[in-house]
Length: 581
Image (cartoon, rainbow, N blue to C red; front, side):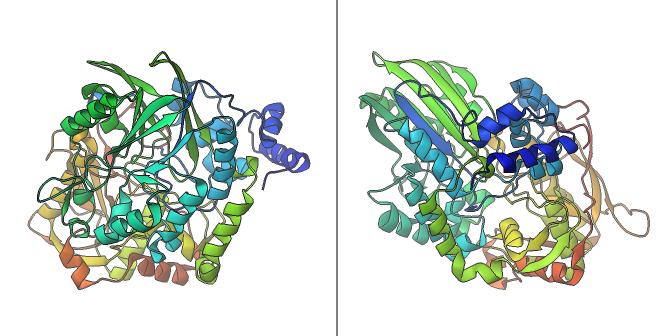
């Protein structure tokens, strides 16, 4: 629920003691739901957008990255800005509400001041408030909604499907949704969403004849203006996730097909065309330069909370590109003024969802409580207490990732450990208890198998080079995954600007012998999890959450993690690298 004046004054006192230069008038207005969420209506076509909530129904803490490197033409440009460069680029005051929302700066201290973010009951309140002043507004879900929590995994996404229906989502596009398997996705689309919510993806086709699996776009009339929303699922799902889960479907970026769909929608009278994308922002920026006739791309996948849109020029004019963060932490509001069949202007705001500043919607809160009730004892089991900040997001490592790596090294008896560069996962403040639910927030996937594999030094380097190219290839269309694989038990150096095959250098074991070089022909025991090969499913390794939970129960108290991050080459001064990193 929202805070009263007395409670908020107490927060201000704590903030002052922590050294935060807060404007009490501004914050007290925000506490009453005033200034921060007072967004006057503009124009006559309205879109609300959230993405990558990863099944987080409750308010959480989520730390933004301190490392989000841009290479090539993307260097120094949104979304590859972190910390102070981001604040400067967008004119955000340090130590403010927005500074905490959009950056990692002073995260633990600021989180204690401003509280948690997101939560569907608070998001529901904000959606209803904005819709009240924006008749006909469409609520768009950018995907990665049905996956990322224990209750979502255990219900095969049903808890989130029903939550989104209650929230009033009009249209969505997929990525992690597809990891429940083709049959489950089609079951939900036919039984739960039909007639209530559009499931859009122009780039998902059958493998045999190339027929569309889902509707490519939807047409609506809003306040007398025909509008089209085109869906674009994550193009590389069959590569980044197990192919065997959607064996009869193909995906891809498909610019030419996108252009055909845009032209078709325009031909049917659409005066506003928006792409609901899960490409990732760098891919969206390139697509916007190549495909004409798109007014805006509301994007996701890379979890970038970017305060303002980027206008991209193309042969037909220009396209606005936005990215709306993750974990239910933000809600985009895009308003168009359409007159005479043309867009005359627009307004855009990416609103942070502060749970303390928005009262919980009673109906949504009751639903969430009902969903969690049968599992509450398991979810709330305390496994250990963390003495340090635990977070995931960043190009190379996070303290949550380090904890998972350390657990695998100990439990599996490995020399080296790999953990996927997933961007999702909640944050834990110093001194907070680590519950089983928190572990599931980092690990809840449909292919959680842990592994222990003999690998040659040459194979280890090949893996790091391959993932590094997925992340740092100068062509966004060749970036096919998440962040860099996290590495435990081994140090290395990385030159993101180097050519493929040449980025990874000086690989050395972390051992009592002073760091022996990794030898190409020598074999090492490597622990990992989330294998995409079908054979790993058949072998059925212990789920990663059991490995981590076992380790935490034994530890009881977890000291601050020391991040094992690579030595970066050629990145000095890059505004995607926080100065204290």
